[in-house]
Image (cartoon, rainbow, N blue to C red; front, side, top):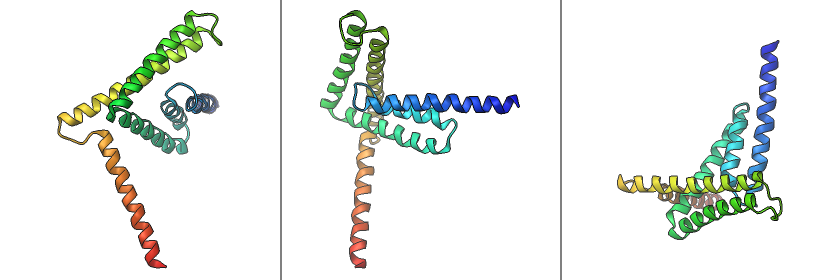
Length: 167
């Protein structure tokens, strides 16, 4: 009986936590913060209990990685992302220190600082992966993404041509 109750309690806690993190990630798509990374984390938490969430986690993880790799492939995007991450950290410090700012508190400032650190860490990992690939003479993650998108586009065109021939 205790084992069954413990499993049910675990499932409830992971479901509530996963949904809360997922909601935060969705909000971060419009607000400052690493939305796709947080969404991936929410699906990861849910995937500990639900099979459907495992597939969604992989999709969200891949999307977050693809966005980071694309940003790392473009010098302008890289610079903008780094400045944005540093700006989030600075804003977080301001939200902690300046009491007159709206919703000023250590929690709101800390969440901005955390988000800025996640943005910077993601960018630096993507830059490191691209550098490692170039040094090894392999395509970078962004180049692999472009190849995959081109293959998908060609397959889609081929399906459209096949559909036209059937008419």
